[in-house]
Image 1 (cartoon, rainbow, N blue to C red):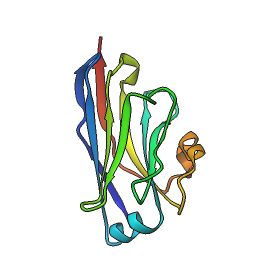
Image 2 (image 1 turned 90 degrees about the horizontal axis):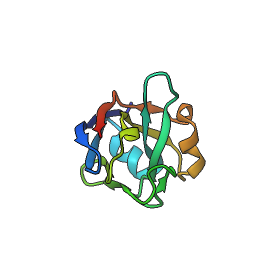
Image 3 (image 1 turned 120 degrees about the horizontal axis):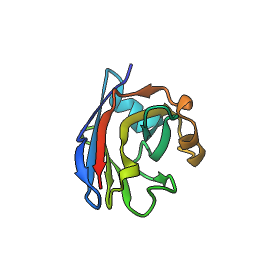
Length: 133
């Protein structure tokens, strides 16, 4: 079993930045991340489906970004302490959402995985990001 826990959300003014963290734990976390994990960030607003933001593989390589954050966000993985990060710059009010960390067992992180949250095996509880104009 793998547990994911997000942190780092809060209220930010438009144009600012936020850096979210996701700690990955569980009895097999280290092996899971290193061997067969596709790690991702999703976000959701009330009344809408959960949408993909960015993903990266368990080696910390091959990042993928959704068009609405590409060029102003960075996903990264610190394998030493099994922590996934997402930094978004130049925040916009439409970035307001609950952000979720997700993990999928796979040896390759295909970009299309971001299009379907249900493909992922694990989700955290989420962290709220609110961007005010």
